[in-house]
Length: 230
Image 1 (cartoon, helix red, strand yellow):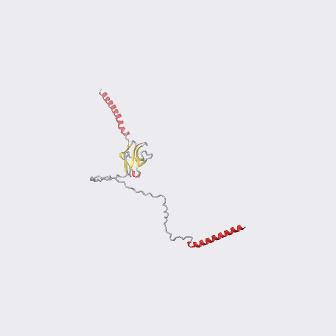
Image 2 (spheres, one colour):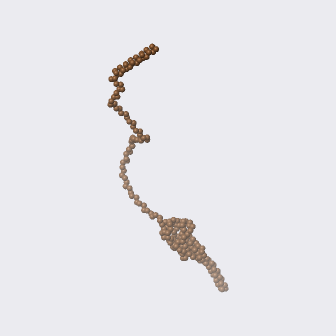
Image 3 (tube, helix red, strand yellow):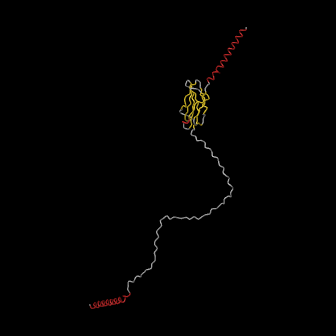
């Protein structure tokens, strides 16, 4: 009667062990399937960087082959360029690459991490809006304000009412000035003109006139006498 009881216990132990193995085996295999860490922790989104920038993060996938870090221009790059080289060793919470930003113009860039598996598939992580500012102006110290001495109170100035003053207005002629006409000057005649008739010859002229008149009368009388005789 003791042997059947022993076999029963053995069968129960085997069944319990199988059940435990069925539970424990998937639990142990799960972490191996979930070993995927692909992330850039620094620099972060909207970060401002300059000079040599260390890129920190993790690159770990199942059947790991290699990882690479790339950069592109703008928040949504159409093309990507590799930074440094491709790495065949996975990294967890460490330095992935060093980015030399001095060779790039200032502006907005993006970073991308590719972790590639043995079958060619990959996992990626992108950080956008990273600003390179190598030529950003340095902060200018604010000059200290010099205290202004307080002015002593003074009497208010007297109000002076302005007086109206006469203004002389000169009107310039628009037309040309006419030349002044000469003023006549009165002068006294130096010598009087002599009369055209000489009074000294009047007696002689009277005699000649009387004689001529008498001759005319005589001739007229002779003419009338001859006409009567005829």
